[in-house]
Image (cartoon, rainbow, N blue to C red; front, side, top):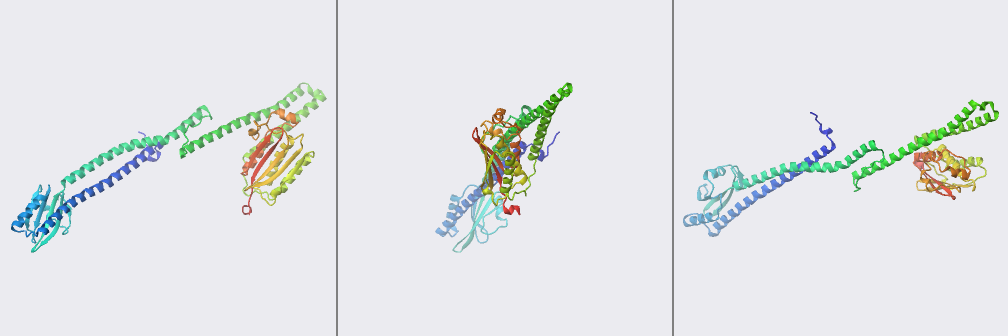
Amino acid sequence: MKRYAPSRLPIKWKLTLWSSVLLFLVFIAYNTVQYYFVEKWMMRQEEQAAEQTMREILNFALEREISFAGADLDEMRSFLQKINQHNQRIRILDGQGVPVAVVSDGIEDSLAETITRAPREQWRSVHISKNLLLMERPITIFQFDGTVEIVKNIQEFEKLSGALFRFMAIGCLAAVIVSGLGGRLLARQLVKPLQAMNETMKNVKQKGLSERVEFYDNHDELATTMKMFNAMMDKLERSFQQQRQFVEDASHELRTPIAIVEGHLGMLRRWGKHDPAVLEESLQISVEELSRLKALVEELLVLTRAENLQMDEAAAVCEPEQVISQTVKKVNVLHPAFIIERDLQALSGVKLAISAEHLEQILLILLDNAVKYSRERKRIAVRAAIQGERARLEIIDAGIGIPAKDLPYVTDRLYRVDKARNRKSGATDGNGLGLSIAKRLVERYNGALTIESVEQEGTTVNVLLPIRSIAESV
């Protein structure tokens, strides 16, 4: 037989057990307190009734100045008979403890004697064994110095108290059942969202990453968890789609130069090696394709390093204005026909939380793109501004822009806009990895890269980089 340790129970049974125990303990505590106070209240009622009877006796004796002899004693007995209650005995004792007047209704003398002979504090109500309540008060009138004694049988009270206890015991038993059922329902409701998530995970395994958890967003912790689960699945699905697209695109990009080289080598092997013109052309094309293939592999390696880059917490560019200016000059040397305007005064005295090498790499990628797609209006602007604890770099060109439908995807790996765009602008066909590399480098330093573009008007790339304070750099 399989046994479960308490710590290994399924969570729904743990919730059922603990909620049931909690409800049961609350019910027990409530009934215990209630029974205690009800019993005390009922006992107090009995004592107050006996005290009221005692006061009536003492007042009657004092008002009439009873002498406890002859006709006065008969009058006293008559009054005692009148006020005596069922299951109660009243006695008036003289100074030596000898009864001078006794009335009784339903109390046996032998039973009453057990309580009157028991040791007790004088002039105090005493409740001892055999369901008897004793009350005594002194009485002094003229030469008479005695005691009024009331003995009351509270058996009915004990029966009522016992019935109340049995009722509460039955209630506790019912509470066990109700708390068990309630705990089960409560656990079922609490575990239901987790079961839905578990079922969704099974469906993901069988049907794919498109499965999502259906839930009602009531803004509690479970709803938040399920929302995060769906968001995580969205991100995971998009990541897998990007990975699949990357593999497909990389395969296509690698297959094309390999096929070209293979075709020319096959041609040369069959007959082209005897024709110097064909041999020279084939070798030239093969070298170009191998260079392209080498560049693609290198960019893929750079992208992989950018994604796995361990950020240096102490990295900082102390003079970003100088680094940016030098990078702009390098691009100007390669493309002297372009006018690259600079407005970098905002960066004076500012330290950027990025290494100089990576800042230069990001700028080269963005400026290269700006040059590539600005063949007619050869003007580029590089501007800087401070936004709170970040510095913003803007690379603005007046090129052909990016279509709105392509703008959300241009930073994806190997994503390229329609090749007709390149032919129209005269740009050479890149590998579609530059912006991916730049974006991942920026994000590794807790920055952000965004692109704004309007077709045939130009593109603005915004790079936000955190500023490193003097205290952090010390």
